[in-house]
Amino acid sequence: MAGAENGGSGSGSGSDLVLLDVFGSPYAQRVRIALAEKGLAYERAEEDLAAKSDLLRRSNPAHGGKVPVLLHAGRPVCESLIILEYLEEAFPATPPLLPADPYARARARFWAEYAGRAHHCGKRLWLRRDDGEAAEPEPEARAELLAVLRALDAELGGREFFGGEAFGFVDVAAAPFAAWFLTYERHGRFDVVEECPGLAAWAARCARRDSVAANVYPPEKVYQLVLEYRQWVLGPK
Image (cartoon, rainbow, N blue to C red):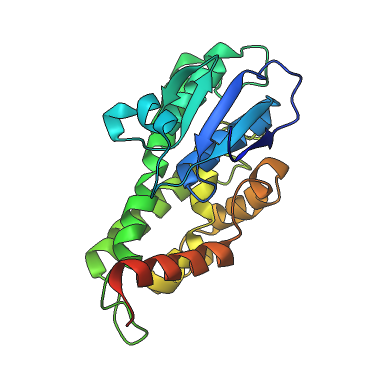
């Protein structure tokens, strides 16, 4: 398979897994982090979203070939959080990401979904034509993003990770977006450390984790990619 590579050392229990993704996608990063945490071996196939493969289009026709898609024995599983839950059920012998208690599992699913709001709110800040150095941030988008970050900070509640001492489901889901904090700060004119000190400390802990460091771009790289994307979409200032 073109562009395929080994991802994750694993014990071989996931050797029939193939991940169709784009490295820079935070949603695809969720899946790669989960696979690394579970020690599952897999093949990775980098997709070109400007020229999607027939395999990707066939595997996720409902969304026109959106990544990530996990193929397990040739059968596709789509959407990052659904893939994470599938890995929990399909490979129960691997280290769990979700807690055992049903209520705690429900809360983890809720906050994993909620964490994605940061990405949507943040995009409204950095993808605007008048976002020059002298321009003020869009106030509604800035307020909504800060509300999301503060809610996550409150839920974290000073713990090491969202599930407590163990890196788990919510951390896997949210860690890729932590790499975007620098971009949010520069376009929203705020400081995550000042606004959400617990969340900022959590982001730093996640960045030092092997599964995250190997699968997520560093914040400055994310910021530079955002600038390139802005220029491609909006044109020069």
